[in-house]
Image (cartoon, rainbow, N blue to C red):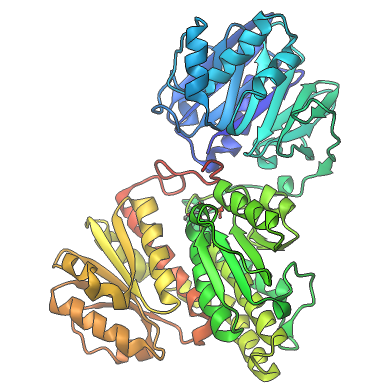
Length: 607
Ligand code: F6R
């Protein structure tokens, strides 16, 4: 999603802004731009596509100035072209924006009636004109910015620069995150602390409804009423982490291969392997004293929640409502008073997940969150967090964050089951023992990469793929389909295997590969019958199973990926590996932009 950078420095800032924007590239974008202010003159360069295009323009025509703002745009209003790229200008005002101004239509009509014309299709340009109009009416820059901000509805993070003041950026946050970085006689602004890492790790996070006046000498923060507010300056931990691909072709490949280590770290954080129990860490959720758990999240994180629903209900006898956050927040369901809510988000900034969190908080529920970014908004607004120890996830397609989310869920299930007395101490210890095997099993699964790459090359030739699974393999089938479609652009669907004959079977023909996820468990035979139905109609089956599952299939000519043997409890964590590798190698064979697939953003800060 859009990335924002601002610098008031002491040297030429344009190259520094581009470097910081590069650190925000992982968020996903389709155009970029920079504006600087020098000798009273505002100037800008913008380019469609990747930052390299903007860099080429800057090399031809460097922008001068020690103050500037920059932006990577993920299009919402208007196609990704140069006129729609930020910064937008209006009479000496330059502005960059992340989010959506929901009342932009009404504001645009008002401004047009006032004689303003529009050079772009964006919602952002109305903000530039609003500020310019307030300046024209005689207000000083910061008052003009404040007056304009009060007119805006929707979600936004904004940075505004003013011709005539080379020591001022005004920024505001209502939704998407913004961080101010404190330098020595220099100040920085960024969508996250990762962008500011080369400059400083002394960070002040703006809270919702804050706006800030930034000068070289320091900052003043206000609320929307104009009252000064205090926000802590903190040392960011995220900034010390180096973001590079190591010896891997893509971040996604690197992140897939990091999974033995990061799931091991995450599990060891929550579980006591030596004594076969859980660690007595603070828990936002009192599992013993609730009758229901609400889990909400988006995308892959939502599918982790779907798997957790099976686990909590089976082992801890705790009913779970697991929802896509964008639906949960609007479906006006009665919330059980003896319940708690758990939110799952790698970035910790997903707008719909955050809105669901606030909805549950408003209803007085205890709020826990499983997050990868500890300084994120979702983390900060939760009563307690369960951090995934995955390290920064840069590839847009979530891999290691997913298996770490599952590792936490599995650990919480053990805790909930023991606290609620639904498993005995010995059964709990058995679950912990099976989780302790996960890092080794993932390592084993990684050895299958060669044969999976071969299958990926075959899949790269097809237009549609169906994924089937039962029980916890059903959400995993949906995750497999999601992973494949987002990075290879091949249409894929994940279905409960039992649903096949209720519709999707109509799609089966010789061209249709069907990936079946079926460890040999108590319902294997049911899934095997569904495979027979596919085979009878000429479908091409790729079966991901174990030795027993492979031995029990009588089908000829199917491709089989044989996973190591493992306890049924941990299969969704370990079986995530072959589906991730399959999607990855299909995309590599197709030559798509694996780490930054088209149209997608890593941090989705709009609804
Ligand atoms: C898919 C993917 C997305 C995210 C979703 C939620 O590979 O990465 O579906 O899972 O956008 O993002 P977070 O976890 O940051 O809330």
